[in-house]
Length: 559
Image 1: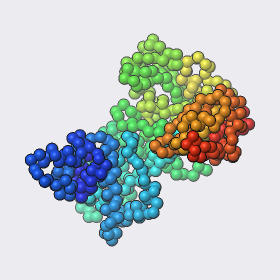
Image 2: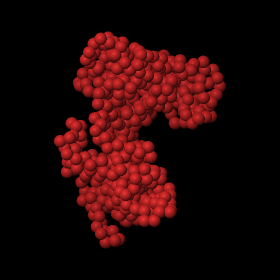
Image 3: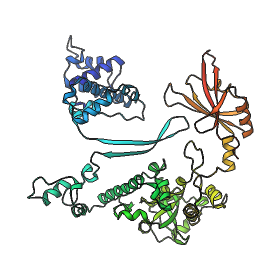
């Protein structure tokens, strides 16, 4: 924060020191009074008023604050002052961008919608408020949107985030340079005698764009460009009408539109040993390809805690094995996980292939198929946009949060057989074959992607009840009085100190859970998913009345 404070307006610094005084905050050398006492040892009657102190003195004091929580408080207040200053200024001087900011912050709902309390460790507080006052004059725009899911404590969890800049031009926005410089230098050299030539890439010809982009030779720059092209390919698929999809494309769509996709496949493939597929820079018809290749890998634990590839199995659409090879890991192995992988040190000694031999083989433009394919691609160090992940394609009905079916459960439900028996080690060829069969079951036989949960899963869920919207002042002991029978209470704490929390109630059997729900004294209804629940109103030991909801985990009659 020290460097930023040097450019802050004196009035902002004065207000921050007043905040410190009012809250009794202390830096490394104490509070404002202690700072002045140490500084003005021989001065009598030195002013305590921050407005009577110099800019440098205020900066010197505020830079003694090092704790993250204190810095967050200071930056929050500086940001508040920045918006307050905008509201006080004449709207007639606003830029078009500022006018939209003004419309936002002056809306009656703004103070409610944006009344965050970002003082916990996991919040990030912007420091724009402590920068120069000209920060509001910036016209840079960045758009952001997120996808959220419901977590078991009743809060929302981030699973996908999309960000675009104002111009959507990657090279320009990142300031990337080819062998002859950036876009501007390229145009200056090309248009020496032309005045007013357009800088906008959309105003230039296809050949000119190609000529500029081919000046990029560094592998890292090429990886960035190919990654972005692959991102645009998927973005284009998401924007197109699903009604025109081939059966193969529809499974790619189910994969990339799953809430977990952006998290599972958020690789950073810019290091030298990653292989980035170039399908995104090929013809737009590349998504129409129906070629399928299924892949599965076996991994071992390396001495640095990472996973190393030791075997890869690949099958084509006809279920023909086109690759089954051991791979020599590039790091020392500390655990071969033989009980899981079936692989020993002797197997690896025979390996002749390395990671770089495998990567190009799997990046020829075909759609890659697999179960939890992100784990395989991460160990293969391959970034490829055309994917069918059977862990994301198939889902259970009425799932409150995306619960993934195991490959074994999918095979039992869709294909009628177990891919592996209990206690038997994995076989990557068998797993790749199973993933391909699952994809083909949907493509060729129109199998339903919503599958019924197994009897074992249902029994576990039926043996639970869920209590939610529990006020913060209700203790676990008081909560237990609502229910009958023997059970274990699994409390999920609230996200905020005064927020509602929730709890799972685990019984020994579904019969006991049903009886406990029956005994609950409350008005029965259904939640938004159609699950049975009761509204319970009861009195606390303090004498106050509170309400909670007790809900079953599955529908009545589920078998």
